[in-house]
Image 1 (spheres, protein in one colour):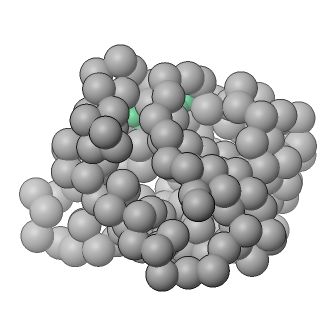
Image 2: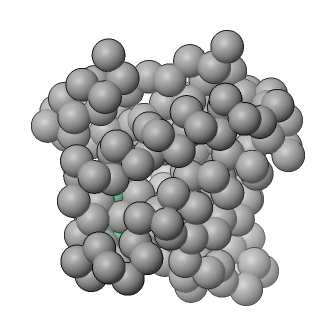
Length: 168
Ligand code: AR6
C-alpha cells in the first residue's frame, strides 16, 4: 500500500529519498522552489544539471541531492498556464507520472512533490491539486513500484487545505 499524504513544509528540509523540483526547461535554476532547492543543495547541483542538456515540458530528470537531506532531486518541468487549452493538464499529469517512473526506476521508497506549475507558471491550484492526486493514485494502482510514501508538500496553509480535502 502506498500512503499519500499532504503536509505544509519547506520541501528542502524533507528527509525523503527524493524531492521533486518545479524547474524550467533549462534546468539551470530560477526562483520559487527551484531557487530554494539549488540554494540548499549547493553549487554541485547546478554542475550536475548543466550536464543534463535541459528537459522538455512534461518530462523530468534525476540528479543527486548533494547537501540536501533528500538523496535525489527529480527536476520536473511543468507547463506555463495559458488558460488550459494548450495541453496544460496533460503536460502537468505527465510531470507527475515521469517523476514517479524515475523514482521507481531508482527503487526509491519515498518522494515529495511541490505544487508544480502553481507558482510563477500560474496553474490554478485547485485544478493542479486534483490532477496531481488523481495522477499519483492512477500510477500507484497500475504500476508495480518500490514507493511506499508520496508526500504533497504545500508551502501555504491554503494549499494544504486543498490537498487535505482531496485526500480525505
Ligand atoms: N518548498 C515547498 N514549496 C515551495 C517552496 C519551498 N521551499 N517555495 C515555493 N514553493 P514555483 P512553478 C511552492 O513558482 O510555478 C522557477 O523560477 C510555491 O508556493 O516555484 O512551477 C523555475 O525556475 C508553489 O506552490 O514553480 C521556473 O522558471 C509551488 O512551489 C518556474 O519558477 C511552485 O511554485 C516554475 O514555476
